[in-house]
Image (cartoon, rainbow, N blue to C red; front, side, top):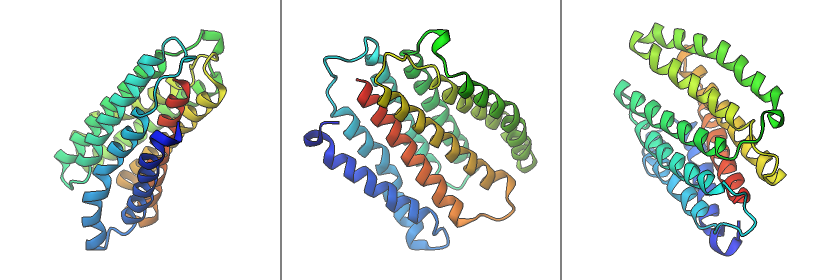
Length: 235
């Protein structure tokens, strides 16, 4: 990313990500909970500002316009999810799940717009995505249903789209810059880790663990940042 255009919003995003990750782990503190109402909604606007200030390169892959648009759309949906998940109600949770479902659809469209030929796919990564879908989806949807039967279908649908998003990042065209591909794939992997830890915390553990709340936000913000950086490198 050209530093003159993106340095300040990138630094702002990094500072917000660190502060929000720390605050997320202090859920017993009223001050920290209130602070998150300012920090978390500011994350995606700061990242989007840095990402959108990167001008398209003259040597960009021929389809990176769709990669750029899809990434920006995913950031907008993610902002909606971030805001919704600040609420404690089931309705807030479902709105957040729906918003992030839209974000993953946008990421899938973005990644598939720059996919390679079948022989170029990362088969190990695709097998991992399939294995995670086959194991995590029934496990998490069943655990969610024990809390509330109405959560079974939304959680299953979300686990499916999350696995598909991860898989789509394993199909990238080798004509993309290698650094861009690796950065995008690292970002989707961290996003997967973040949501897996979040689901474990919410549906499988009897008591919330503050350290896991910090881990969720740290891996989430790092994942979003790496996806944006990879898309910027590709364009």
